[in-house]
Length: 181
Image (cartoon, rainbow, N blue to C red):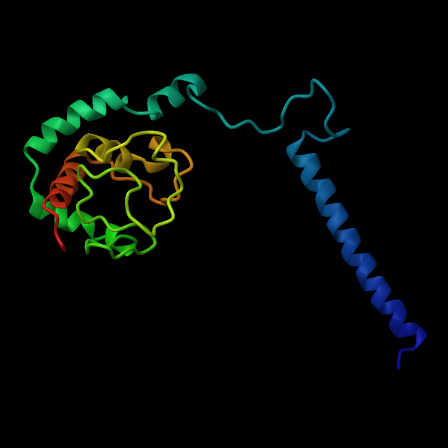
């Protein structure tokens, strides 16, 4: 079976591998922490990533307020093209149906415009949207599909949103025509 020499080679192989990992960790720590002594208080970081403006950058990324989004949307919705919205619906169709009563991963979107929130029988809603609004008005739909996770924290909808206001307006105009019913 195993003789002493084979067992010694196996144990030596494990010890050698462990030693290589220890030396690699020590070398990496020396490179990235500035070497000599580890992570003492008051030590300067060895490699610093420069950031232009850490405070102003976050505020700039937040984007427009809900009031600004609504004003932009109302202007775009007045000129919305439902035919163009049909193309915007294609990614939505992976999880939503336009047929009345046909739920998929998401609820049916048949008649969603001006429909009460969480009103489809037999669909297990997260309840996050109920905390935000009561009826799916075009304005509420616009805010939701801009960024679902920001609009209704805790929603089950796993979608990053549609950034272009005219694309959102076209989609909502398409949904308002109650296609698929």
